[in-house]
Length: 453
Image 1 (cartoon, helix red, strand yellow):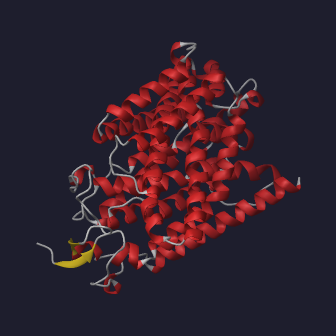
Image 2 (cartoon, helix red, strand yellow; image 1 turned 45 degrees about the vertical axis):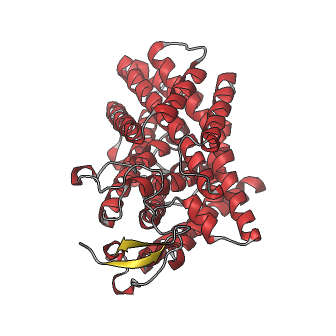
Image 3 (tube, helix red, strand yellow; image 1 turned 90 degrees about the horizontal axis):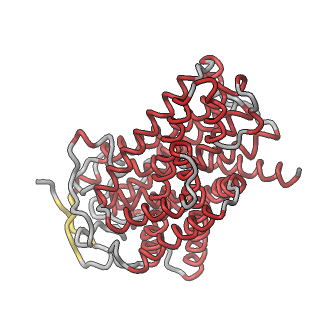
């Protein structure tokens, strides 16, 4: 039995927390008597906490990050990047992937160490009226409003995938939204997690098979990962690739799911392993989409007419037959459904943490948040509005807001009142600071170039 130390729990008097949880993060720098502000409380209404079997440490709650990362917006942006710029911008996906690993690891560690989501940690850390107004406003703009735009694209993307498989579906967006609402209302967390893992693996297989059919130039593919000077026409696409990979709402979703599914006895290395696998799998799928579009653009009859994966699937038909169209349809449907589930869920979790609502998935306010996002997404998706511009705007806005959200997370990850002995070490701080500075520089230069033009 591990030694225990007294620890003040947020709003719950005193309790006991295993001292082992703090070992291996900062070594001797861990302070035995730290009293975190957001100490883990297992008395909340949540799934019973326990360490998953070792065979499942590769896949679990972190897979929701992959499911949220790979949506129709990601597929659209990656397709356009490959068609317009070939393999040249793969380095941007590489940078975005490394940045995502750094930030998601901090979010996951926060959920593991505190038993709380990022929204709850922000609410408890920032107590003055001014700091709360600023932080709440930033989160609401980035998560609640931004997710409405994303949800429209998610549902429309799912419908596009469905139509590639079965033909026109007049009320497709409403039908998909209803199915997602049913899963969020009636589905248990573990069942939802398994559905999302299945969809992610299905996407991976479909897009890998499609990338192989176009026989990409491997030397050009490898060269695409070498950073290079950006041309003026690259800036918005680079920001879109970063904004669709390093997604702010994923930080809230990840911290919340880790806090409810990993027990205090689980080793941090398992949390980190699962996080890295989830992020790299998502980046791999993005790379496969770029490879498919870049590798096929020279042989397509009209590459300039391609705006999204569905256009690419139609033009790949004469080259790869119905096989490519079916694979693209299945992958797009899986991407749309998985993201249509995670976007409203992430928004509801962020709102619950920020405003201190009861930890109950049937709470009317919690349900109201994800229901409104689903309804708005269904209404816009059903209207037939072309969403490429909306998606690109949301991704560029994400890239602009992300350094600020990342700065909040970095502060929390270094706060002993929040994290106790699980605060960042110097390597984590250096990696996070470097990633956020580079991201801020790219965003600033890109906006200056675009607005100056």
